[in-house]
Length: 116
Figure 1: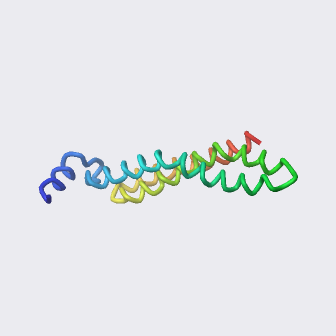
Figure 2: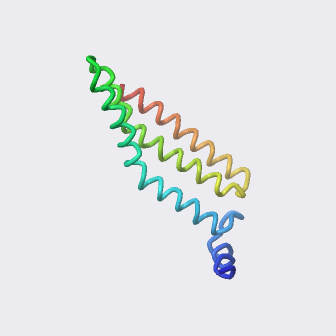
Figure 3: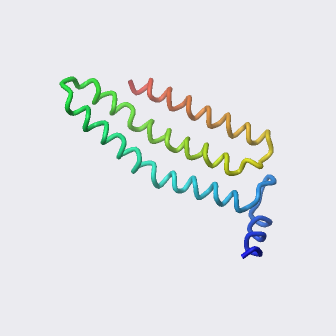
């Protein structure tokens, strides 16, 4: 077993990060992609059941505006978690990934404003 882990670390590693960590980060991203629609649907549907009880349609309209950006936000959170798994990476690359994730968050906020 140790030989397999060493093989993966040596041949699948990049930027000084062991291959096992890269594979773990990839699995986190894949799981996030698979679960994001399910998670978003469950949360949005729970909120939608509450908003159906109100007399105004403003809350339902707001929920429709937030639904698609919320899915992207779940993906950004998954990428953020994957970033910590490969924390051994060079500081410049780590900071660059962090800036791209911050940009993604700003993009989500702008998308919400645009849709409203």
